[in-house]
Image 1 (cartoon, one colour):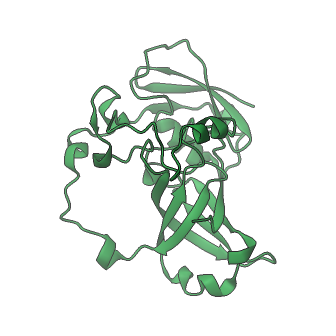
Image 2: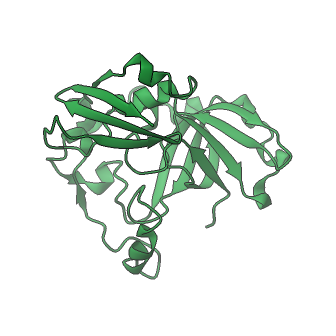
Length: 241
């Protein structure tokens, strides 16, 4: 398989990427097709749908890792391209990183094959001189992620109101209270601010992080460096550069 497109988002690093797309429904993304697939005819009728499935590829075995990780990860992959370091059990963030579940009973990115699945909201399809560009919301993907396929979300087939959420239902996600001073909010584009607050509310830190109220964390977002601290259930933004 080869990418048909790449997505452009405001999150250039693994740190801060939401653990589910609709935990941050205002996060914006632009899907830019490779020249071979940048055809108006290929997206004819797509704007009749409200949501899309994106099938995408982790760029390396370290999900959301930096480009420097690629060579290291390639050396640990077998001849079929699967992740030789995958584990049959993982520690889901939803459980605080302290309990293990089977990898196939989770959405963990640490899988045998580097394939991701995301449901996004379709904002609009923009015609350009270089072909159509698809604008989406709720994009929980790192900037530059390769897109392998795009499919419409079909409510009668894809929505199952009677479905059980398994162990996830017994472990509701706890959001943080975000203290974001007005003078710092003003440094962020107003259209990108809601997505940033949603990312911060989901707690970008690793699951099970130690209580270190004096530690300053840094989040790369929309060409900004956002500095913050976390004390208990409160996150305080202390700088935006």
